[in-house]
Structure formats: structure tokens, C-alpha cells
Amino acid sequence: MRSFQEKKRWRNLAQSWPALALLCVLALFFAWSVFGFWGKMEGTKKNRQLAEEKVAELEDKKAKLSADIEKLSTEEGIEENIREKFGLAREGEGVIIIVDDEKEAKEEAKSGGFFNWLKNLFR
Image 1 (spheres, rainbow, N blue to C red):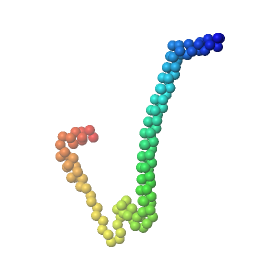
Image 2: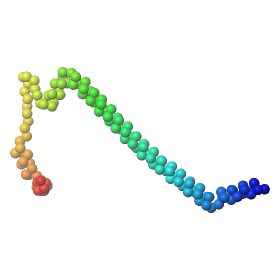
Image 3: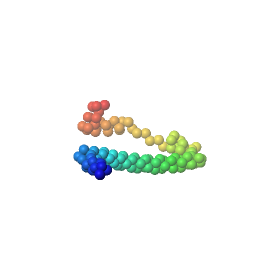
Image 4: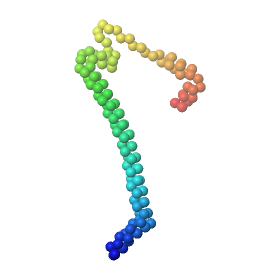
């Protein structure tokens, strides 16, 4: 009989309002933790996608640089690069240099109207 009364006491304790309130608080705490974890997972997915895009971009850049290195390992590639950067020509070739006329540029700036006047005012 005493065992039965002890079981009844535990049942009454488990079904009491304070015990149910404690269980509700614990359930809310775990739910809050799950939602926080879910938010972190979404952030991780976005970061992973950004990292994958960056890796793809870097791989493209690596392929381009490898192609440039291969191109520069030949005489024609070196010559083309020097011509591009320094504007050099071979012996017997002519070079045309185009020079902008500064007077025309100044006249365009003067004849621009109100907006150019306003822009020149703050220079």
C-alpha cells in the first residue's frame, strides 16, 4: 500500500502546475535553440554559395593566367606583349601616334552650359 501511495505522490507531482510550467519552459528553450540553429544553417548555406562562386572565379582567373604564361613562353607572345605595353615597332614599320588637341578639349568644356559652369565652380 505504501508503494502505491508513493507512486501516486510522484504522479501528483508530475501533473502539478509548477512541473508543467517547467516542462513548457524547457520545451520553449529547446524550440528557441532549434530556430537559432536553423538560422545559422541558412547563413552557412549563403556563405558556402559565396565561397563556391569565389572558387569558380579564381579558377577562371587561374586558367586565364596560365594561358597568358603559355603565350609569353613563345617569341610571338613576348613580342605582342611588348608592342601592346610600350608601343614599339619593328625596324621598317611606321608608328602612328594620335595626340588629342588640348584647345578643342578646353573649348568643349567652356561651351558646356550651366552644368559645366556649376562643375567648374566647385573645382
